[in-house]
Amino acid sequence: MPGSKKEKLDYGELTPGYEFPAVTYELRAHIIDQYTKAVDMPADRGMLSEFIPPLAVGAYAMTAMGNAISFPPGTIHASQEFEFYRMVSVGTVITCRTRVERNISRGKMNMLVLVMNVFDQDERKVQSGKATLILPAQDENAQGY
Image (tube, rainbow, N blue to C red; front, side, top):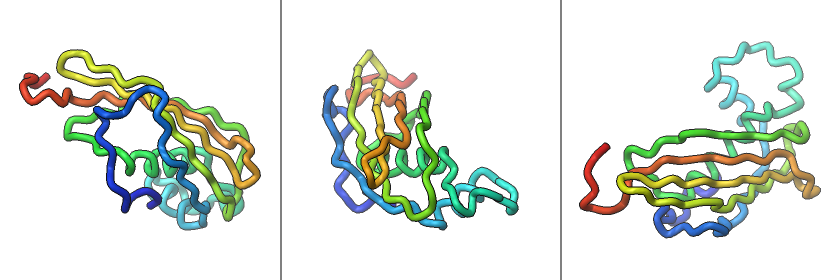
């Protein structure tokens, strides 16, 4: 998985506007296989032999981004928004760019909002999205929920 061998960032140090290093990878057929297995999709995939399911692209991009951040136990992926602009085929090279929109600390919890844009090898936007994560406070003296 892209991004998995790099040192992870501490979410508390992320400031609004911070841009993660871009992650680039090729969408190979095994991504379809992993996705269809994970979502229990029937074996007769029709057009999936040519195109990658949009949510598979998004899930793969989110995983690549998530591999760059150290998430503590108790982290909740509270919401996810996606906007899809075009289908991509097997073999497409994708670049995912992610930036921090908000990182708010409120008492016993933090809220981290990340914005992601995914482009193909011709720099055409394939997808955009926003993820909201709820994380436990990093303050050692904070009480549990």
